[in-house]
Length: 314
Length: 273
Image (cartoon, rainbow over all chains, first blue to last red; front, side, top):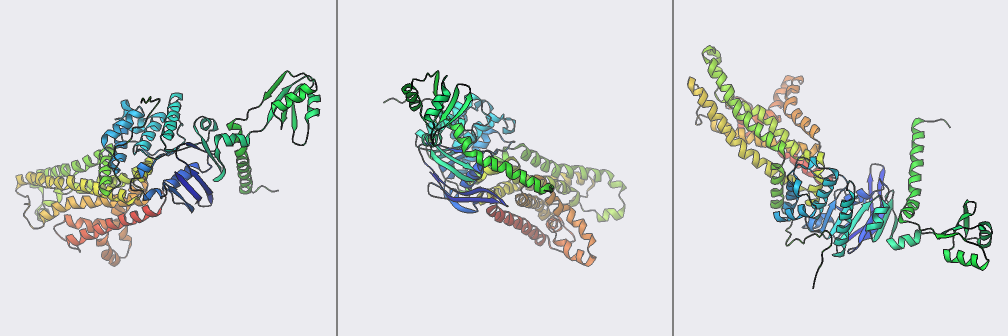
């Protein structure tokens, strides 16, 4: 379990993490979502104690990470930035990490086998492809048999097989009762892996909910209707909570009613329907909706600052 | 009861230990020996130390009949045999910087500090492992350089004996000096956290600062220069001259290295990784 309370991190005048409070529970896969630069990696560095928070606090299993006598047994982490000496072999990299905790050598072999790097284990990590480096990073994260597995953008650079492998592994780890915390800027990936979502933007918490709840809360009731009498139908159902947007003659999207409600209204008035399709809001759409404000703000802010720098006369 | 395993499965770890200084030292030993630059730098340091002793004494021995009586009087047989230390200290000091700066440049430091988040055991582990490695390699190398050099000089009967005054101390001192040079480099590398910057700082303090002292009024220069790291440290290699006694000079050099490591330790606790 990871608990962050009012976690804040400021680098110079940039607020990277802004009063963030959340709990990551064991037994489920929690997705940590946000656009690039939203503070996900910084939050993970704060959890590991690599950076000290400017304010607030974050604990793992009730203690600061650094206060655990066997920290690799508590948290296994893969950070987005590479954390491997390029001149050292995969085997020696894992061995050096294992030795800090007195973990036996055969564990290193076990992990190399688990991530499928047997054939390159003695090669220098600098020669690894992105995908191989990612597998080595995952092996390093799992070497201490951690209760919390925390991976920053784990599918980066992996082929489809590798992505499915990670997804299965993470689900299996959560099913064993471990806490699994995965960051991504890709909603589609999280939709397939995560049970719970923590969404941040510009360092601030935007949403903290189960995937189902998140979808329900952000899904809109939109129905696509194709009918020769589309205009009459819209006139019939229109109201303060119901809006219609015509897409082309005879085709409208009605927002605010379910397909059942629209179908029944049409039948009651004898309108002919050629199509009646509930429009599913994907997790992707909900995420984009949720984070768009943040992105737009940033785009404007950077334009403003550009204008200031160039001292454009008004 | 059956259990079907679908997909990857992480085997449980039978028993995990805990982070101790000794475990971190083991880990640091693995790190040191598993990078090629380490092996090359140490190999160079050994070859420089012994090889230059051999070459310098062979050249002197060859030209001895042409050497003037005045120069013969000034000749001390220890000097050419310990000449290789001058070059070896560059390799040892640079490797000291690299031992830590290499972790910052590759990002390995994040893995190291996640595995040992108290941080200081990593720095002490590196100091112990690198210090012992240089000691174990360079003390025998210095003795080998001495005996090779003196064997060559003995052809002209101008050799020194290990029992001559100050000679055993100077030869042993060469190994000790190189060890502390390595630790000084490590401390500076840990302060700067950058390979180029660390090497520049090391070379600047050791080799650029001494000639720069000449811009000072000579009374200041004469008062301060003996206390510079290089001058103070090299007293242990010398059998003649000098303001400071050999062990006092070496003690001051050790204090520089200790100060660099102490500042590095303080910064390591204070700064973000």
